[in-house]
Length: 187
Image (cartoon, rainbow, N blue to C red; front, side):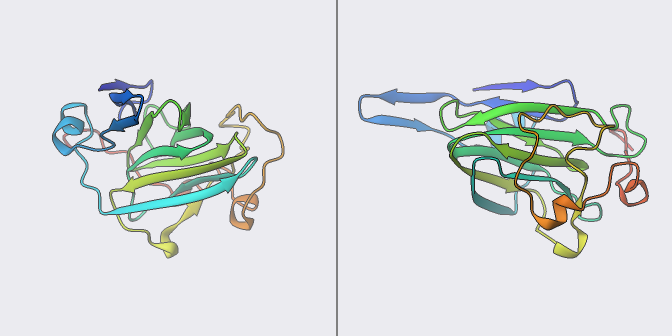
């Protein structure tokens, strides 16, 4: 199992060991001790599963008051997955990491609390699963504009299919007073 810190501290790309033969495959999608040793010591309290068609963009989402860390993976299809540091005062504020997650590469991405997260379906269909470190609180959900020019995320599609809340989401600058505050480790 390989855990790779990305250019955004705390965002970790996970490549699990896949054991396969002519019958199929087996892999661990989560093991508390191994993931803690790899830098993911979060406690997960909720699992979610979505299915979306090609061109669907979900995000960029976060919960400012009840921040959720997410361990995300794809079990069917492929997505372009994005994590954005939106913590006010962070040295990496407004920076993003983008990776391809697919059923074929088995990779996972850990998105820590305080980051906005979104994904774009690049295959015909994608089934997306994720573990969360806090429960979903609909009254606390905040969307950031997926196409905010300040973020400059190179989405691989110009006109995705969006939920109404995502189509009307404010830019990062317009949402500034709602964003979580960066707290350095040890504070």
